[in-house]
Each structure stands twice: as C-alpha cells, then as structure tokens.
Image 1 (cartoon, rainbow, N blue to C red):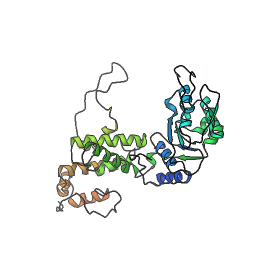
Image 2 (image 1 turned 135 degrees about the vertical axis):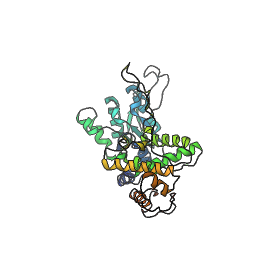
Image 3 (image 1 turned 90 degrees about the vertical axis):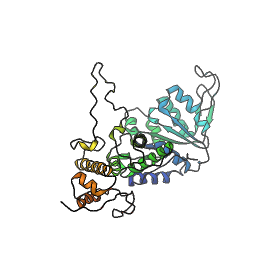
Image 4 (image 1 turned 45 degrees about the vertical axis):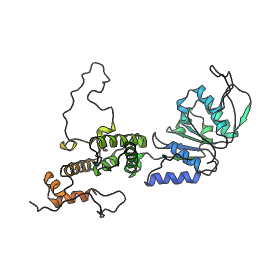
Length: 366
C-alpha cells in the first residue's frame, strides 16, 4: 500500500484536474507517460496510478534511469547472466522480472540510451526481453509508467529519442502543473510540511503569520513542491528554536541556506564582503522582497503585511497599541487588517472573525 507519509495535497483547479485524469486512466492496462517539471510529484502520481489499478496487489518497482550508466541500466532493467561483464559473478534477475504482475515506474526515461530504448520497445510491444549476456527470451506481464521533465516529442524529432517507443509509451499523457500554477496550494503544502517538522521537534506548530502565507503564495517556487518542502521545514525549525510559541514569520534567508557574507566566491582572491548590519526586514521601505514575484501590488501587499506583523508582535497583539506604533488611527489599522484578511483562517469566509487572536479597543482619531 501507499506509504502513510505519502500525501497528494492540493485544492487548485489545475491540480484537481490532473488528479481526475489519473483516476480515469488508472484502471487501463496501458502504458502511461507522466510529464512535469522537477519536484512536481511525478513519482507520487505513478504510485497513485498503480494503487488505483487492477495490479494494486502486485509489485510496484521504481527505477531512476538517470542514476545508472548504459550497461548498469540495461542490467538493472533486464538482468544479466554470469560473466556478462566484469564483476558479474552470478546470474541476476532484472526489474522487469521482479515487477511481473505489477507495475514498473521508469523515472527520467529521456536519459535512457538508444540500446536500452530498443529493448524497452520490445517489452512494451511483446512483453519479451533478454538478460544482458543471455540468449534465452523471457516474458513478463508488466504495466509501464514512465516519467520525465523533458520535451520528448522535440527529442524524437531531433533523433534523440525513438519515436516508435514514444508512440507506444504515450497511450495517454498526464502533464502535471508546476506549483506556481496551483494558486492556493503552496500555503496548504507549507502548512503540512511545517506540522511534520513540528512533530519531529516534539512541539505544537503555532501556524504561519499571515504575511508568511502571503509571501509563500507570491513566490514562484522554481523547484516546485520539493523546494517548498525544504523551505517550510527549514523556516519552521529556525523560527520554533529562536521564537518558540510565536507564529512563524516569513524569512527570505531560509530560501537559500548557503546565504552568508562569508560564502566562498567564484573568483579566487575576491575579498569577502563585510557583514551587513542587522536590521528588521520591515525597517527598510525601499527593500524589494526577492521571494515575491516582480509585481508592484504584490510587493506593496507583502510589505504592509510585514509592517502589521511587526507592530502586532511589538504590541503583543493589542490592535490599538499596534495602530499607534504605525502612526494610524484604530479604524485605519482595522481597515488594513480587513484589506489583507489578516488573521483569517484558510477556508473561512472573510467576515468570520470568530477566534481571532487579535485584541484591542478602538482609540479616538487624532
């Protein structure tokens, strides 16, 4: 069965559409090709296809084609006979034999050599193969699911991938949306990963500050879910160690763990820059947040949310004092909170303020 830690999280239309596609093709006894950028969850989708199929009780074998050389990949997939190559001291079954009656998941299929592609073509077409160094024809009953982040049609047109193999692998193609196209899913995923980090630390997760949620949703996440997972857990760990019990505030430094004034330079002999004087992020109104896409309104919103975070933290949640600290009237401050849905829990209506942690009483306008 699927590992209990495996989660397919998301509510965006693009992600739900991909899941519906998976459910439609899972029962078919045909090859499926999964296309998507790195970190979009291609392996998880492969698992879902297997466990929703009639083969769910059979083996699910995973092979990363990019991790092995041509000879080793040939041996790994199809097995080898004793003496087939240096170091082959005994006969070994390949993954296609071990996956008989189940599913084999071929990740990074675009990196397979022409020789391996030719043998794959015969397995797809006839269910037959030969071990490396052997002459006996073996048969297997395997469903093939392949995945890649490459443009296989373009590679086939350029002669870099067999077009006949592509035709047979692509009975149906599932293309996964990148995280930047899944509006609203980044904060859901970040919350899930952060809670797992808190459990690992043996603490209760205090939640993300609203400004953190806004910044997470605004970032484009070029590394997709894998990058977001590492960031969310790194940020949560740092925040819960430094400010235990406080909501986790977005810190752009957590995006790059290598960021340091003493980071080795590419050019030898280049002087190491002096460390910058410490300052609060919201103290510099001219600073552009690198985590937010280059959109003026998004930058302004992120900055205002950071101001609210700092003011409420300083005032220990008292809205009247926070308003004074920002030079606003109480009603102006409340308008700012309403503008950004500050303190609103995900999934709740905008006007539902029940359970809000913010406190304070109105102060007369000056």
